[in-house]
Length: 449
Ligand SMILES: [Zn+2]
Image (cartoon, rainbow, N blue to C red; front, side, top):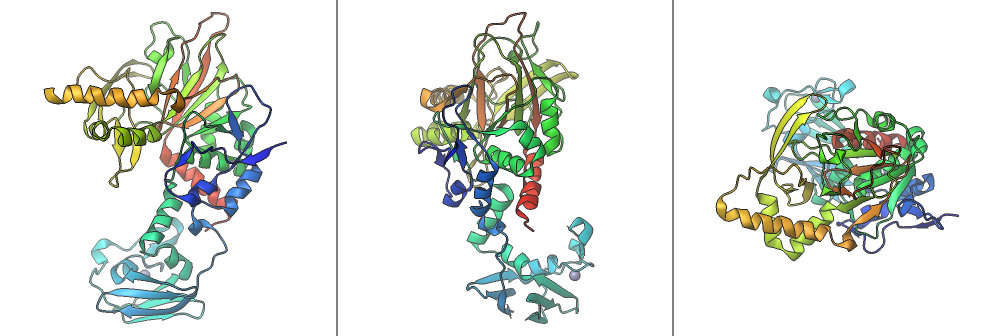
């Protein structure tokens, strides 16, 4: 019998939004000992998601009606007064730019036909009015007419709250932070392949939590490619379409040995590192080989709190990475990355750290070298605290999917035995493709516009 609970214990912190935190619930499996501590994603849980959606703007059935509309000619704004209270303001220029008529918009592509060369960014309006079917109609000085749907306008309101809700609906940037107490959300591989609700729950958890475990895949090659097809296509790199993690003679990557792998993100030697990683266990080692993960965003926040100077260093000093060898074809990569990437609002958006491919070329003035090492060591020490690391052991047929821009993952050393070679198959995807599938699934499952 499943009991429902938040898979997040108090230690699992949300970044900001309460609404977003309610969006994802999972049930915990009781009396289970094998494999990772996990919480399963079920269709019941997904129904919970639908009623407790992450962005209120995405909920269907909320129809907004226009009570009144008027032009504020001096400010060159149109004011819409809504039936349920409140007003929204829309600049004339923006309205003209986004006219939805067939002359201005190619409906089949939902793309703008109107050229910037033909847009008058100082336009006034002749008439604004509410139509009989509760749309907003504007007649422009050249007598061109635009008609806007009330719901369409409401979603594009320029108020800070509406803009934030829209951005959250589009990008799902709210994250649940976690530490060693995380029970990794778990779903059934076959269900994810064949059921849209299960696939949506999987991708939502992948986005919010950063890691989802899939159980029940056949223990044979080809499953990561099949799963990638569920989304769109996988990301080709110099290690091939998919790659085989095994103890290899003359390995071209430290992953292809039986040694310990310290916590890292994959491929910082690429300027655009893969966003999502799939790893499928085909054969596990007789001894060792356990996987380790930490929430790099949560660790970055801890670093910022505990050592702001180190955080500043890692978010501002570019570090050289390199990767050379032959696999899919021969390669000689060089990149420059900060260990922690921030967006213009100061939010952590990507961790770039792999100690194996960090270059001996260090393009820093002498006086910044020691502060850089001190900052990196401080960050790594925080990651390695036992209270921050989640450890699990993959079994044949298990498939883990995780956010490679956020999580750092590692592996304990293992004993290599010729009659039972540890074998994982991996593949990369990018977040653009994953988010695209997530939006399509959300739209089809929730019936959103
Ligand atoms: Zn038009």
